[in-house]
Length: 538
Image (cartoon, rainbow, N blue to C red):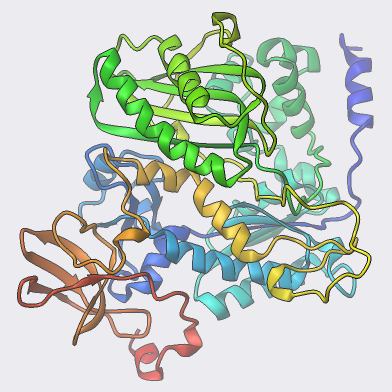
């Protein structure tokens, strides 16, 4: 038997798997771009790129039309534009995506109260907790797809398996608009032929290490002994991949988790040079990170700084306090020390600050010493590694008690669905708000240029060259609602159209004679609300 065989057997035996495909994973297809095409009829069927429009902008989402030309998420926008010169390039509209996400999450909660959002456009659902009993997976998937299409006009892909791992992989196999149900007896047929990069946690660095072992498929990965993987990749990562190559994943669908971190980051239009310039920029990033921390506990024990250099290498350093602290001064000082520990002798492209080990309780922090810094870590990574997908925790009520009140009030459906144990899942609005804030793709796009992000404070202000971004919603006193194509000086190019109108051509307006006002997105327009004559002409 292979060395470590007994340990591997114990590891496998400890995993408690479901006996049926009852974990559903929903993934909205090209979500940001699809919302833009839905709200902007003239863009339907045409290539669309959503993301940062500055010199170092990143593609958050590419429509399928743009993907056929080679554009993809996390690609530098400049490169994507070269590949798809006819594409419409739009900035993300947070409020629009939140509105659509809220409807999609609500559809899942019509099916089962056990829904775990992963990001603004994907979520897990536990079918075993569906009212009236566990539905057949194909029926559940079809119900979700039909209901989302009915309410939003969007397509979603659905995978169902006996684990989160298999369900998530399955949802990606027949995009867009596909359904893949993987029953336990079919898992090997589905998983083993797949490229090893399909397995969560296999990024470029891990892939390189596995290739040196001759691993290119999941089947190759499964053939590796446990001790080979742990010696090559480390104990935790190697063990995780050993189990996942066998389809073993007993993580439950979790409806609420406490937020693990709060932070902010910014990519600069021009590389920063010099200690004082970098520290000044750190202070701006810390200001934003502190605002988020205040909303989620107010205190933190660990401060992590992320520095990306002009050669795209990335360094992270952290400072840990003996106890959580809510002192802005101490947290700011820790962030500055962590950045300096990274060694800012090279031009800096990106700065990030994140607060970890959050708490609603804080103690006075002791002085920081050099030994509090973590050991150095430096690795060459992709330019926009912060755009890759990640879990976005929903926020649990830090003051919530475990015991129910003696005289519970009637359940308010708007507060979130009632779970079988009597607890209440978070309201959809709360969940979506957290997802929008945490979504790495939106953060990457929003911070693509120096300066404060264009946020809700701009709503209601007259459109001008300083606040204009392609894709933003505007309104004219007589022409109605439309969206910005571009603004040059006092001349604005706009398309006056919504999901309720036929496609429109661009119109050029003199902003002195025809002022426009920035407005919030109109929200979700169900296809049934579109006038029949508009639907017929679509």
